[in-house]
Image 1 (cartoon, rainbow, N blue to C red):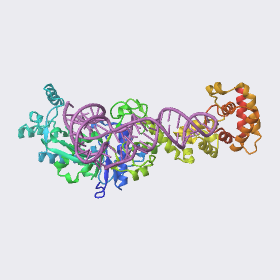
Image 2 (cartoon, rainbow, N blue to C red):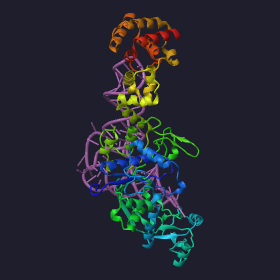
Image 3 (cartoon, rainbow, N blue to C red):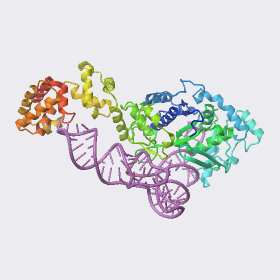
Image 4 (cartoon, rainbow, N blue to C red):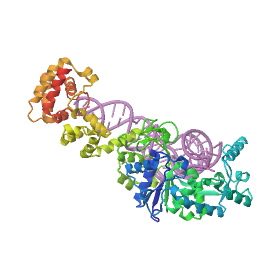
Amino acid sequence: MDTKEKLVRVRFAPSPTGPLHIGGVRTALYNFLFARKFNGKFILRIEDTDQKRFVLGAEKYIIESLRWCGLTPDEGPSIGGEYGPYRQSERKSMYESFVQQLLESKHAYYAFDTPEELEQMRNSMKASGVPSPTYNSITRSSMKNSLTLPADETKTRIASGEKYVVRIKMPRNQEIKFEDEIRGWVSVNSSNVDDKVIFKSDGMPTYHLANVVDDYSMKISHVIRGEEWLPSAPLHIYLYECFGWQDKAPIFAHLPLILKPEGNGKLSKRDGDRLGFPVFPIEWINSENKDIFSGYREQGFLKEAFVNMLAFLGWNPGTDQEVFDLLGLVNAFSLGRVGKSGAKYDFLKTKWFNQQHLRLKTNQEIFDNIIKIDDQILSSYTKDYILSVIDLVKERAIFYKDILIEGRPFLQDEVFFNEKAVSKKWDVELVPVLAELCKQLLTIDNFKKDQVEKKFHAFITAQGVGLGKIMPMLRIAITGNLSGPSMFDSLELIGREKMEQRINYAINNM
RNA sequence: GGUCCCUUCGUCUAAUGGUUAGGACAUCAGGUUUUCAUCCUGAAAAUAGGGGUUCGAUCCCCCUAGGGACUACCA
């Protein structure tokens, strides 16, 4: 990799047509990681050349998503930078001279065909057995363009204000190849590339032209993008050649796609919540019909876990380490370790990553976050006590909210008895034994778990009562449930007074 | 259909000519625990198929099969 030779400048170039899905976020992540790794710049460029598909709020969503993930651009709209503007719509006037250049060098031509004529051409070609007709070196000769029309007619048409597009004139039978950083040499015969429109009749460039011009103008060193762009990469390479920029063309790296967990195809925005998990980093509300699509952030995922999971979808560090923070990913990242094949998304593993990252949090951090979910607990309990509850239940949690759920019996006075648990293990015959046990435990001076445990065992031995009988009853009385953290730890936490209250309450109310 | 890309356990992947093909998630079985969870130990589980090249192929080449992307005046 000749990354040392030139300044690394990479861009993430989404189109503001809606929310970013996790594949897009991963592309941004890899760009970010690569930039940071080589002390380069990470640039955000908004590719809004299609005004028809513009979606209100999409750009804001993109920026907010990146911000949440910690992928802050060095240059971009509303951030600025010396290569701006960073919205293609605001660069509109810059593209015209480049189009002219291509027209003058005969690498491109005007085309006047209406959508209906194009449609007609495709239909008649299909009828005569061509499965996917394209505007190319063969068909262009029978279409209405500056190659087939007399020069003065072309001029007249343009002068009279007739709508036109500019198409690239792809040469016949020429090998176009480039070395992809991830895939190696990729080559395509130019006869298989069509005469793509590079400049639309509305005066805007298409993606292909804008992309190449901007990457060149912004001195982009590496283009790291999804595999869906691989088929048009030869066109882009050819465009660099037409402009005479072949020596300054960026290095390309086409990332494998993220696939649906089951079934076929790549994960798409339309999958929404249909598959049982979010496909968007943060919540998206459709401004037109108010449809809500859930996001990882709102579902309680840690951004560290989300980013960690995304990084591992198509990349690995080559070691056994799987849990990384952003900085760790920067240090470990390399394009050479990005795989070639598509990766099926695994929501279960995403949760596992969350669990791992949650365990890395200090009790203080967990405290700060759970009180954001429920600050009621602050009015009834001290911070130290809550910290102890966190310590008791944290290993049972995947999300912050699980701490609250697991810690519930310790964070409210009232005990809610689980009916199933009661009917299964609450034995009325043993109520006197439980009462006696309570009495015994109350005699402990130093109410710590070791003492409680000792006393408990001494009691059941003396009484000859089965541990499996009395322990569940004690647990039901204290927590209302049959499962939970260590009973002795739990008792120490709530203390002797509450223990007594709860046992009495259970005995009297069951 | 055409063009291009891809192919190791169910899933994510490691091993870039010589390994008992490794790890993680999931699964299953033990152990720890009062219980659930955690944790520990173990098990089952893969080189798509066929040809080459080579002393030797997961690894290099070819063919087949399968999967994917693209095939717009969308990106």
